[in-house]
Length: 281
Image 1 (cartoon, rainbow, N blue to C red):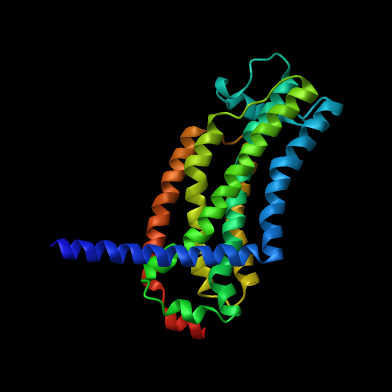
Image 2 (cartoon, rainbow, N blue to C red; image 1 turned 30 degrees about the vertical axis):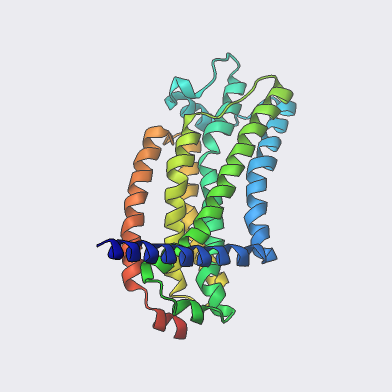
């Protein structure tokens, strides 16, 4: 019994080392690719640095951000704790833009990064003639997918969290400096970061891996996977139009649904993966 437990622990440790080695290799391959690194770093910088500065500076010199009735409509359905206790309506609108309207757009960061890395995880290795050795490793299908997913998941989460932290600090400091009112991100951002970002990232990775078994080039996989961004854009538009508020309850429900889809998709991909067919496709 003791010997069997020891062998089981040893086998699990060896599998973990193999999974880690595959995931680390994927990350290093992407870091050595200039185009991939540009895609991974440029968009988060625009979102976390350039965009909030532009919005705050424009507000500083124009004095308004509300150009229609849609924002007023959204303002009427928001809970009181989301908006600041200030009399200036325009400052309320600025807070609305920076803390509510832009929040869903940050979901595009992990989607984009995961799509870039995950597409290289299979198709990139296939194009570079380095996949055959990996396909014949002792790893099971589930372990291989787990390794590939981790190689995309960890960088996506890290970059997204760092981007949100930079955004939070920059919005607070810049708003205090330019308009004399320090804007702070609300609870929805924490819920989004902890629950929704990981769920969306896993979904993006699994979809890209599934797509990778049907296409032959990295660009094709990335082009198809970019369609994942459309539901996020629809969410942004629905908020801007005042139809829907992307609050804590909505995020928890959405994250739960996506997590169930992730589990089902992982089982489906693990069963459908065929290493031999993928090598010759």
